[in-house]
Amino acid sequence: MEKVTFNSVVGFVLAVAFAIVMATCMNAVLAGDYMQPNSVMNDTTRNTLQIVGYAGGLAALVAWWVQQFAASRGFLVRFLFALFVFVVGFCSFGGLLRVINLMITYPNQLDWSLSGLYWSSLSDFYSFVLFMLVPPRPGYAGLMLAAALYLAIFGPRGPKTIRA
Image (cartoon, rainbow, N blue to C red):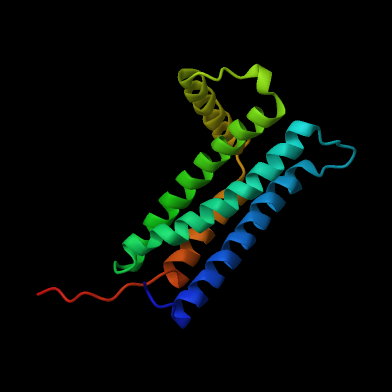
């Protein structure tokens, strides 16, 4: 069994802190869009706010963990890899959490066959991505770039390889 080192404990604490900050920021950006004067949030919007926060936190944890594969590369490769993983993870977790929310909230409206679950998850993935893209939210683009930049600078690092 691998011995727990100080670096792995610090890395775990940094990963959890990064996930909490990203979840809070993702939720805050979307809440800021809906906190207009004289506006009332319906249940769907409130659920989507929660889903965005959870998806942001899960995507941050996964991106931190997967960043180990690019840890020994240069800064640009680490940045692009972190950006790709974070964006794909955020959209995927968002779609998955929408399906789970639908399963819990309205179980009778869901086709429980394998093909029905597949099409429902695909539909919720597309609706989550469209919800995040329309109208354009530059705050999310900035957050995703900031997450990738943070991972490229402070994320896991591997040993430098010397090539002959």
